[in-house]
Image (tube, rainbow, N blue to C red):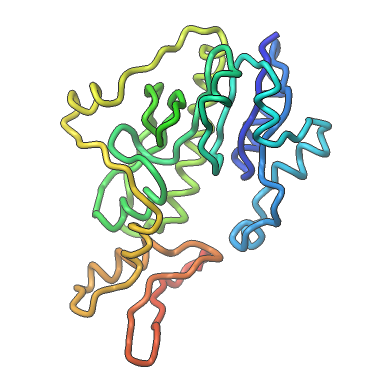
Length: 253
């Protein structure tokens, strides 16, 4: 029996938990998730909450530091909001696998979906990798890539990356649990692909939310798409009288 701990709070983590519970030879020791009230976007979109679902299923809800008292075979981090340290990682015989909502090795860090639109990328994706103490730098297991359509907003990229990411986990976790997956060094892969890995920071990406005075129509359009996310402040133009918000008319406004 393989002992697993799931890290994550959002609906995609709930879906992963349910899938793991259906797998033969897997015991879920507990989940580590947020106990805070749901954020605005999750309330608006009715995103399932791990805390509530784990309680219904009778799965132990753990605090992060409680992991240090347990021994498990594998950790599965599904869009989890905290960085695990060595004291956490060393409790897992096989390691901890992380679902990162962006393509690796080129896009690490936070708000990569917004950055992809701002930068005019034509492709996005989602990745699973082994965790280490650095941000999204562990050995890469698999990547699923998909095109960015001209009308896609950041929320649509977010949804797609979660959907494709869940499928990656379902495809790879059986082999990972058997101990047969090592992964590849991201820096070596970056050299082969001729890409430069970049780590995106929240404050850096949020600064792009302000549309420059001399922005072209395309820049305005892309910035609006990049920050069109339910429950979050949209793109804006700064005037002497305050902010003028710029958003796209859609079902996800």
